[in-house]
Amino acid sequence: MMQSAIHHWDRITPEPTKTGQRRAIFRDATATLDRLSIHVTTLDPGKAAHDPHRHPEEEMIILKEGALDALHNGQTIRMEAGSVLLLAPDDLHGVSNPGPETASYYVIKWFPPGMK
Image 1: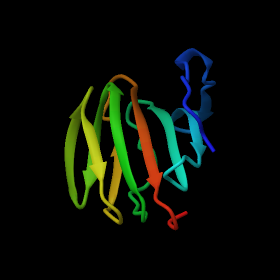
Image 2: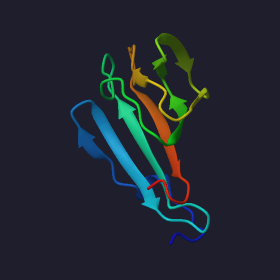
Image 3: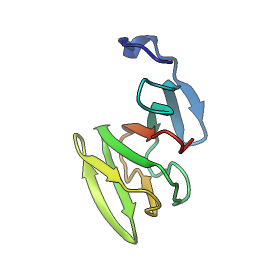
């Protein structure tokens, strides 16, 4: 079970992906959740993280830098740095980087008791 901690950016190793890189921060149980998951994706210009998809858990995307085109239930909306996208369960969604620079964003997912 996770305890309070500081996760220093420069100590989180970036792992290369086919669309940029990913930094896994944590993915574990907490005192109130079956699992809390946070990672940071950096998308190269012109790339999508993955095909649009749905999942039963809620998700939050916080754009750290760059821009994203966020597909949400059939509508694509541009996100600028500092924007937050909250996704309800089973909403169709996906993000892509319109470029010309990389885009980095935090992905936060939480799994209430019994959902894992």
